Amino acid sequence: MSLRDDYIKKMEARFTELKEKIRELREKADQAETNLELEYYTLVDELQVNLEIANQKLQLLRASSEENWEEFKSEFEAIWDSMHEMIRSITAP
Image (cartoon, rainbow, N blue to C red; front, top):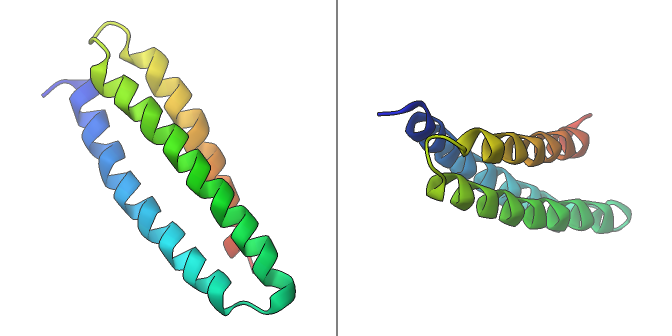
């Protein structure tokens, strides 16, 4: 298995984890006090949009050749880092 294939497999597992985290955050938003509810929903919706963008980048990464996959990897990781920062901001005490 190539480095690219290993990376894709790892990112697919992370996608599964992130989808679960977004589901948990949506449930938390459902239970939040009214003044926090809108903020949670806004951030969760933004996470969902970014997840779709990251998924598109992952699809490009899957379709890329061994020679140019690094380009898509850096784009994917930038979006991924942004989503993790958003999750930290939502879940920070």
